[in-house]
Amino acid sequence: MLIEARNLSVRLGDLDVLSGVTMGIAEGEIVTILGPNGSGKSTLIRALLGLVTPSRGEIRRKPGLTIGYVPQRLALDASLPLSVRRFMSLPTRVTDAEAAQALNRVGMDGTETTPVTSLSGGQLQRVMLARALLSRPGLLVLDEPTQSLDQPGEAAFYRLIEEVRRETGAGVLMVSHDLHVVMAASDRVICLNHHICCQGTPRVVSAAPEYRALFGLGTQGALALYQHSHDHSHDHSHDPLHEHGPANGPEHDHDPDGHTHEGHAHAG
Amino acid sequence: MLDDFILRAAAAGIGLSLATGPLGSVVLWRRMAYFGDATAHAAILGVALALAFNLPIVLGTLAVAVIMAVTVATLAARGWAVDTALGVLSHGALAFGLLAISYVKGVHASLESFLFGDILAVDAKDLLFIWAGACVVLALLAWRWQRLLTATVNAELAQAAGINPDRERLILTLALAVVVAVALKVVGALLIAAMLVIPAAAARSLSRSPEQMAALAALIGAIACLAGLGLSLLQDTPAGPSIVAMAAAIFAILAGFGRAVQRGNR
Image (cartoon, rainbow over all chains, first blue to last red; front, side):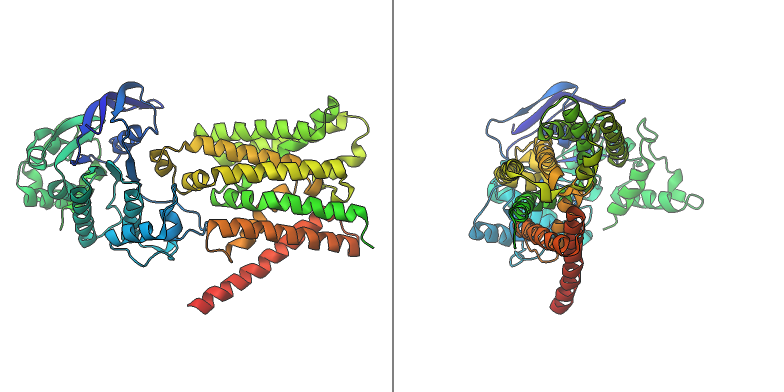
């Protein structure tokens, strides 16, 4: 295991954000943490990175593990003049050749002088990935990497992740509330809602009742699921599928918003 | 024609600018402008305490500025609304400082010099403190630069690379306290934050990298000091406000110039 959490619990204020989470990532494995908004996905990532202190349990890292982290976004103040090239040299200075090579790897060659603040969402994700690769990480951690991407951009970005994994052998841990990703790009999916509801290959997880309960999905196939979710979010009154017995699992009410979102994410 | 006190004043202003330029740039990037204000206001309380206990004023201001800076950083880390915490602490400390000073005999005449600075009265010892303080701050910034910049860009990203963002913030906070302590004599408590923010903001429109902005901010600060001193000499205006006014004028000119350059590039 590159990194693992054992019986991890995190309490923020009065809220048990995570309780009894045990999970790990092996070398070369792509793992996606999936869960609705507010389910503790980002907290789990932050705990694995050492940004929040667990109230119980422990985090174990393989000794000498380098983590390449790709944040959701950079909240740069407009007063900071930061070019792509300068960004690549944070926190460790790299040569022009190294920077150019990493940018080339993610298809962003020639952008060295571009200010980071003028990159589009997709370009920024690629640049941040290139920067993370410079430290030759054993584990790549990406927090909702496709949030600001359109469908083709999303697909291309996951192909890129897959290639990087193949070339470097790095483990990849991603966070998503995006069903589409889970089906396409992961070896293993961890379905999280404050605790681990279920985990396994995308196929196994998508069939698991816990997963369906969490996302409020019925027992139909993927397309029907999409239609169900979609109709559900826009129009209650003439929704024949709505009556088809969507799961009424215990977690169904946790996040009606996430429910709507998943429907859209599946559209492509 | 140039007397010694003018040379000392110029040297003090340049020394201060060397520190406030780079530090002020970081303060802007991290949206901490008001934080500098609060630390500076608290310094007045330090002056009062130093006078009451017969301690060197630099020591009093440094101690209170550090306490203030750490308190604000702690409150912010605990999730207080930073604006609220700063507003209360900043003006509260200023008010208590002014009250406390009124109890100390014989300083009524010099109260104004703590609020607005008295750069023309800088002596050799002050000059030494200012340059020593500036060197400490510059050394601190140079030492932590890469880490500080990384933590400024994204705290989680820094943490993943083994950098502790809280520690970097604390170091920045301490540097701010040092600058406030040594700048009190030059521009006074009310205008210290101006010397942090204005030269850095003026440098922004000409800069293409963080380092360039830090260096340019120092240069612009030094020019503002010299121009302000000149104005003060010619027109008999108060020196501290003259310096800040010149810095603001440079900002206005460069902001217009920067926009013209951008338009030209399009």
